[in-house]
Length: 251
Image (cartoon, rainbow, N blue to C red; front, side, top):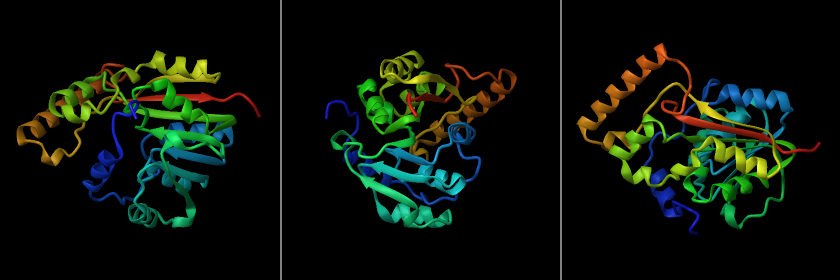
């Protein structure tokens, strides 16, 4: 699958290396204000999280907004999801799970809200993966996509100290005009793309990095936090995330 920058084994290894995945999600979870606004303004009742294992956003939407939620991913490990559900006062009946390859799956049901957080940047063909999202959006429904902004300081940090992880990302996808153009060409309306977050840097498997790298990362993080208190605007050079939203005409 040439369009894909990762394979199933990559994600099996990635998730099996993670510890403490079952966490209690707070009401102020990342992107909570944006999601709350979208849900209220569009009277969202149903949602699907694409490529979202272990399903943090599916759980978040069920827990705090009582939506009918579906999680679709091509790697799903039920014990991890069940532990996450239990930690958040939910059961396995609260989330519909589809384990499948998005590239071989036909969207049989459409949803009021289709979201992914940290998915589209793992594909070479940005238009193709976004259009696969759009296939799940019902007329009048909302597309909500977030991805990291590796064109900011955090991207330099990833490239310098975790090149292997950096290379799993399509940096060209992290372009506001490209993202908006894809949605507009697909016929979506109210298309918005912008940078989110004042400043942050992170490393995958940070505890395995050399001590010097971890200390330098902490210094960069602190410096960035101080600077963005003085210059608080969200911007391309500093913001760690990008948010894309759009509406499918109809209804």
